[in-house]
Length: 264
Image 1: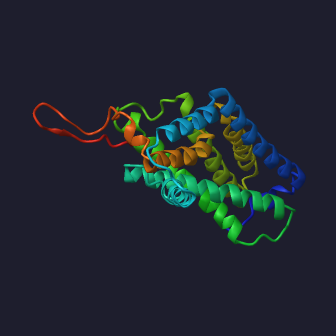
Image 2 (image 1 turned 45 degrees about the horizontal axis):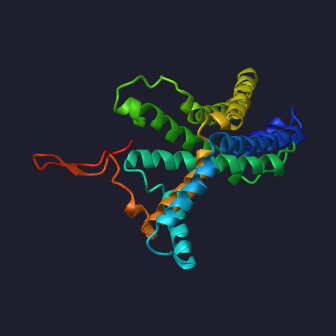
Image 3 (image 1 turned 180 degrees about the horizontal axis):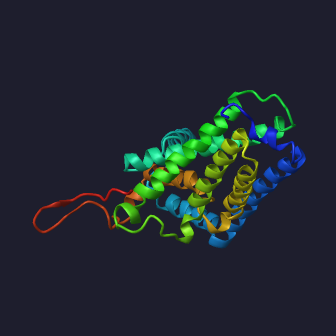
């Protein structure tokens, strides 16, 4: 199963052209949904206005070399390793989900566009990466959903309590779960159940990529820019002119220091 390209097997009933068209449509949905999200929520306008305001409040200039260094540090710490998470458990779950999704998405595209012909010889590395990526998303996603979420871990709410903001993580988990079940059943010869899992896989994929305007999918594109702007505002001194946040360390009347809250 791990070394079998499930899309090559699928090509016996669905043409590679249809599969490739589906992938292209999903990409267009992400692009269109992100643009709609930017316009509707005015995220880009807020971001550029905030950068302009920070620059005007800066007490020193930051040259090109320093900006490049800040950009590298942002990518290394905030994007690639998610160092901004206080909770180690949440950081690990996030990295499993993020890198698992990347492996899953890239290997899906490679297998569909290069090796989806019926009986095509697919290098074993791609099906392995596809299955490993899907499993990593499931591991990180279910761990986060049932054990790490703030409203579950800290507030004692039911893990089955659903909100609009949960659309992204739930559709992502569903997509990779149904993908794995489809692959397993396809390899074991369970035609009827394999077909059902494949249909659910397709539907959850449509929700994942088509639901960008209503989910947190677009957040992954804004997060690096926001992290860079934050580091830049610290470097030019503009952040030092801002009032202390409400959750900053403070001392009460008895001289007891309040610790910063740890985010789950």
